[in-house]
Length: 431
Ligand code: DOR
Ligand code: ZN
Image (tube, rainbow, N blue to C red; front, side, top):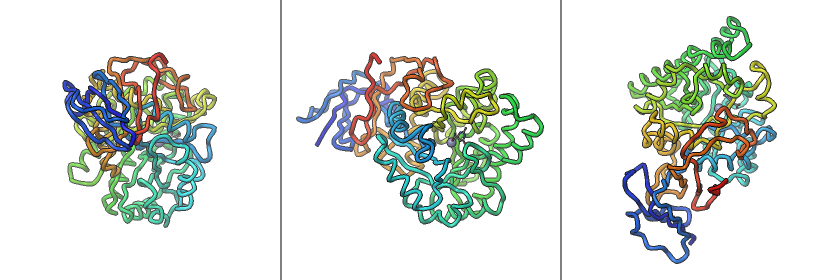
């Protein structure tokens, strides 16, 4: 059996002051012992970590990779390599371009196409659109949940109307899976556009308002309660919607949520200054919303950090604001963005590791992922916490290399990413 011994690592999840040895055998973490305590097995490769961090691979449950259908924007070969470079060892993907995941045959065909291309663990969501009605249960064993767009976004696959939404919530409840929503209200956005006009970053922010996110979150919570559906609200952007989720959880309801780095690094003032590179749905909101989301991450109301990697071509993102598509690529720098939040004091390091690995593992039922512990899958990332690097989109594996983080200095860059015991990414120190 192939083996790898990581000698003298720090496991920040446990104790930042202690050193450990971690032995990987085959696909698993076989032993974790005090630093210097484990003998080197005959066929093992030794990694002298000398105090570097060994982290659980991040589990990113919100990614768009566009394959099949829009491979000019991204694909699984490039996207999963970007993920590995960005410290992600498991990603769950939302297909929001045709062919949508509307029945079992579509999911089977997609998985058969993309699995052989992937260097990290992958999974997909079923699509909730009118054509998928009646098909949720037949794909239940193949998907990690179902994704519903409650407001207009890239792909134009939003669903509105209480009765059809109710049928979808009921269908998902019967599968036992969670229902994952993009919560923005289409009517409020349309009213906002009518009032503020379709042009420019300022109008975009005013139309894609916190009120729109709050209204859709309210509707989703009501339908989930009525139909007994477990609800996860993706990419929260406002403190107002977070309050609704905090109340629902306080009442013991099965409700979880996530947010993304762009809502924690930027405000709508940055969108106005930077332009289409920060155009995203939901829109980036105020400094107060950002502080509320950070507080929600700290107190555990926000369960997950995910990338919402949404690749578009450089040409598309170079259009004027109203014509540019929404979405920010993120996979290549996801772990550095998350860990730099800890370095800057915005979040405790243990909280970052929990929200990007341990809690998404628990939420998605990955019982042996999300921690560096004996018997867990060897999905691991080696990071030198002293190493600082500057974001250069031109170096990214993703086809979408334009990034609003260009030039930012971050910590937390994966040096080695291991999936199921195999090295899938190694960064040469001088690169
Ligand atoms: O900004 C966004 N881009 N929001 C979404 O909901 C979808 C995504 C995309 O697929 O480009
Ligand atoms: Zn998305």
